[in-house]
Length: 169
Image (tube, rainbow, N blue to C red; front, side, top):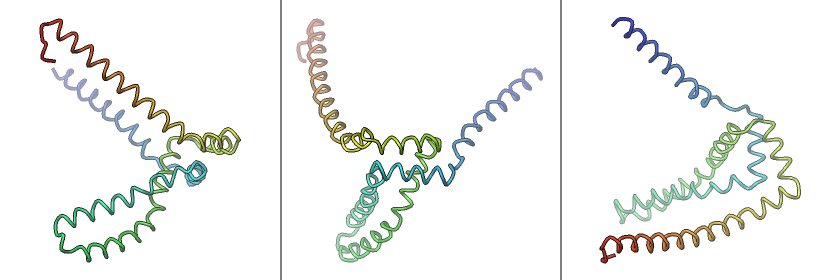
């Protein structure tokens, strides 16, 4: 019984140590050079400004909440909104740095250098220019396909239910 207890304790300790290893690695901060490269890559791709509406969205959301609590304070809330918006503009750089850290964590410095070099090529520039259009077209096509598939599934399910004597569908 004592041997089993020791074996369980050692096993549990080993699992706990192994569980901590990935989280310790995930918390490592990328180098300043990697963050700078990631920032350069994101600026080249236009990937930083895509997150900027989130800042305005937070302000608008919370303004709406305050107006719901007391709609008669609209003027004061609007004044406070302007103050917060100015601070939000200054904090935009913080957001951009966090996004860059995400990239710097996912890619090595060499990866980032290679990606920057690629996006400066004619094909890389074409991807930057055409990817939004391609993504939009792909989304439209996927929606059409999903709607058709949904109709096919409903038709099939109704037919199967009728075979079972369930005609209310």
